[in-house]
Image (cartoon, rainbow, N blue to C red):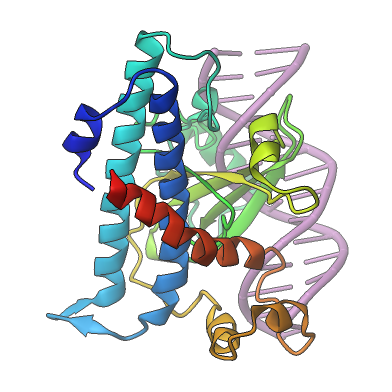
Length: 272
DNA sequence: TAAATTTGACCACC
DNA sequence: GGTGGTCAAATTTA
């Protein structure tokens, strides 16, 4: 869809907000599609470059465009006072922390490490890091990279704890990190889900870029899911004890929702 | 047994 | 002093 065209055709007030919600929805779907596609490209090389690497770049570009459009729309709508209230999860700006490149050398004692930290200031809070990117998704763990959890905190005023992850390949000097925060079940979300099948949404905030080699493919364990899809019976896959849940929170309903909704959403978009 | 996760403590920032 | 990000020992899991 041509972004300029969509902006020109931006209808006033409430329709604008609907369009923004659609764009947000599109953002989620692209993330889920990304999580689904990346595992299917192991070892595929295109013109000497990893297909996965290209795919990641393309997905990031699409998401970047989407975020730009949403923020532009939001700015227009807010400035015109179209409708009160903010939608979507605000990024935790207060907690934007800049990572400090402090490395504790091997053999340092705990005291030495503590001293090292105090001198260099490792635990600095991120200060308005413009390089951070936030996304709202049903499948926060499937973004094509491998992460290791290093902390969890209860955040003031939040219903759910925030989890802290860093790239598994930190020894390769890859200092990418992300935080995952489950969203509260707000009214707008409740309305969009049918009773009894509310799907948890997560705000994922990424800090820094991955500098590690591309490990993104082999680690996401969706082949099991794909093989289940071959059976054309997702319900069986979801309940069968033969299919080990690769990670406890693999959100199969959310993935199904991608397939269910993708046709509808894309048709809507093309009508525009 | 190695790798991953949990959790209390520490520390910087507001 | 409160809060949020990180560390690292303890614990769990594969």
